Length: 225
Image (cartoon, rainbow, N blue to C red; front, side):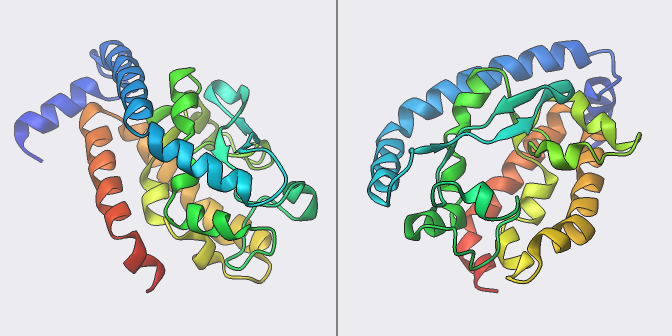
């Protein structure tokens, strides 16, 4: 990072004097980019919606409850990747060969296509392009005093943790996935969420977006590792 970028980061950071302006501009960019992406990707979104509908009984969208800005619950938009009543058939974590996954759902999760409808959550102001990934309330209720600051920013479509754990289902494997997630994955995710909250700035957001794009371009090789 250059000296000029370091100075801008200090000014744009969470407590910097330009923070209110940065957050306002971030919201403008979120709305503009989300609306544009919905238009550009509408053929793909319609195709995926048709595939999900053809994959079996149940709605096109999964509308699970997540903890949002300041802990306010909201319903997330995702293409449904599991059978109906999947939440009653298993825990919140997804195993690598989870029997609840539909054939289409496995493909959508692998290439993160199930996340595209969250552009609607961004338009509604419930999410941002960059921010800690929205978590189920079961886990946010376990946050310690230091971790509660994670809820002080809007959850996002991408963050440090989503890059590191892009192939999370494979990392979890097939045995005791909820226990493994809680003991091994969630603490690291929280560390990365805190890192973002404390360092957030325009440049950090651009860095995360760039790394996310690179990671998605390499996603097939990452799953085959």
